[in-house]
Image (cartoon, rainbow, N blue to C red; front, side, top):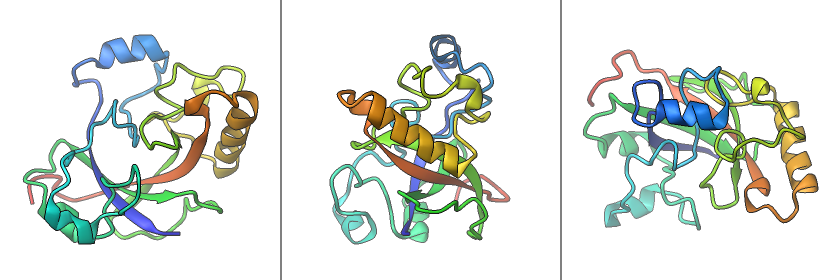
Length: 182
């Protein structure tokens, strides 16, 4: 399982559009959205520069994912309002207790194949597959087996729905002592 890194803008109660998002989504338990959904949490480095190529995942829809944390951090002028995430695409086992220096497990997300939209927090819900109340305070599923079950049910019950054809992602957040500029 390859460990990757990405920097996303934070989206929470102090963010523009938060109240409207909570009203629309019905996810009243959220204290923040921690997701790879680029609509909710835009990429901190949306433009791929030539010198990124040796340090990023060079495949479709993955160009914002870095294989080198130090390089990613060196490209960010300020990390104060960013989530620096460590992620694993398609884990086959529960990675909740994975020892990953400086990173804490946040939960599992389900992203469409374009790695653009979260089926959990940005599709209006799939009430016949999972309840909003199953999502954590950051909009993720805590339990690996339940996340796998939701992914399978979405694909089975909504075969024509683009956002229901999902990959499972484990999300960890960097726990820096300063959280400030680097």
